[in-house]
Length: 159
Image (cartoon, rainbow, N blue to C red; front, side, top):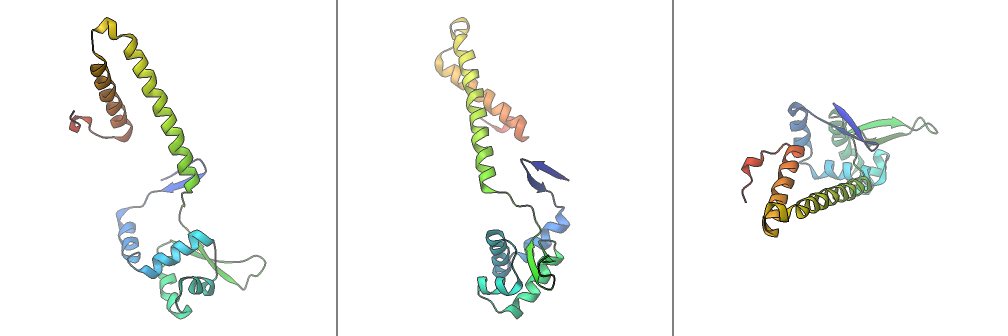
């Protein structure tokens, strides 16, 4: 299943795919290959080798494993079809998108909490609750809503 959120693809993997990936990423060289491709975009095998400081011949097996796992792919350039490049073949979450989502969520939560506090404050006189009791109720309500959204059993939260 793949969902599209603000133009960024997020995929799910089954455990039979995750374990070999985790094993492959134990190698510093393979992690360096992926990091370099993430930072610099598609590169030739020679450019990757130079960038991470390894011999091109030692790169062959690492690239083969990453290709077999579907983490990278080999492609030809349109302007130079004889020249092969390697590029990432995994969804990438852009940091600026995460920051935007984080800010928007923070604003939504702040508005929600403010609205609840105002509603509760307006009823303090009628309910006979103190400000501390109102804040405690508000916190319990927020935890309950967050638990629903995140799928957390709020019975485990103790005040």
